[in-house]
Length: 270
Ligand code: NAD
Image: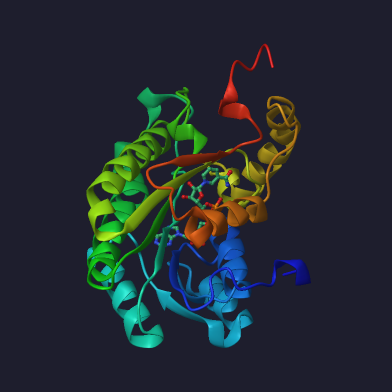
């Protein structure tokens, strides 16, 4: 983390970040800690989550958790309160693309259950558990990681798209419902961010093959957006910092695209 990222935007705040062991969650955990927050890092990948927490020292603590399991999510919130004395920010970030064929009729619907369990139920359960604590403590911020795939319809990755669209709707509905308790609920819709997730695996294809495909596709994805470049996990982390900080005190129920302008308009005429 560069010196310029050090600050006090989140001084005294306690944050839970799901999927904090990699990509966007990891970058956000590092930035939040650099801005004074205490961070609970949750992940199914214990090695990755532990490594991130260790690198942040006293500011962070790793809790193994599968967000598709209600008990694990409750445990996360309890640990934040027990270890750091409260919960101000819940970043429901963990998500998977699922292993899917490019066409819906070839999809494995057992995989659909898994994607819904993590991408949608994980966000709803995270919100439910965190908001109960926040309601008792005078408020807080819940941030959900959706995707432009939840805004733009498309052919491939059907279950990923529908769960992300549902997360966007849930974010707005829960923002309205929880406002009474001074709980803000916001969402982000990242575009193409180079992380392990964007090398999603297709059945029968190794991860190495998919990384090769992703890297080959990258120039096409990059040129197909107004800013002509993909984003980094840090780009998303900086938006997360803004939305979770007091600078965004009057903002709730919004979905911020971090997408190089992909969802701004007609790709042919930009
Ligand atoms: P990533 O694969 O780098 O990180 C995801 C992390 O979530 C991993 O550490 C993984 O172990 C963890 N995880 C997976 N299942 C989990 C579970 N059941 N419980 C707890 N942790 C779990 O991916 P990323 O790109 O950083 O993605 C983070 C979020 O951003 C996801 O919700 C994703 O849909 C969203 N997103 C990413 C992009 C992109 O281009 N990378 C674009 C739009 C949205």
